[in-house]
Image (cartoon, rainbow, N blue to C red; front, side):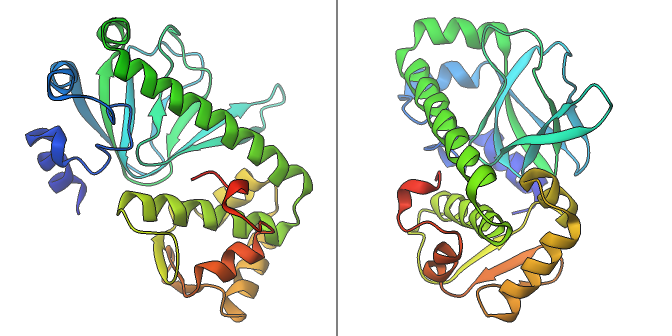
Length: 249
């Protein structure tokens, strides 16, 4: 669905929003959803556009409706490192914190459902379901970060690339409410350069292993961004994980 069409649909009703049952509003009853409706607004960003700079004041929090964003941190010598990804239904911002800890940049065209920060913080006190869901999401993010430490520290370059594709495929399957199995097609929201940055690899290494996975039939590349996974189980095997527990969903 084009961003404009999705924006219009989302403005009509939260109930038909594609992230309704995965985002911070997942457990909301009708009256609680109405409270959120009163403080929400939408913002669109083009690929490459900065959503917020590290250290800047944030007067909003929000959920990614469509697209993807990268979180980056700058070192003292000017180098930057991508330290996280925000996918559809992920939450941006932290209640109680006025300034952004990381620079957040749209890596693809992105639609964000925003809430004014102060009213949202008040809702957390008044609405236990929203607070509970945000806690669940925060703990899930912590688990994912621990899994990512394993990936970066112990896995081979090929396993890192396969693991990233597995994560994206599982999130795509969850959004369309189908099991992550069999044939799956995803729109890769990262350039090869961004993949290399996020995985701590060189561009040449990413390109070489993507080509190898394609040559061996593990993935099919259609154009610059579309990746078809003919047999999801084969990709999971390439990631070095033998169960669902090793990769965040």
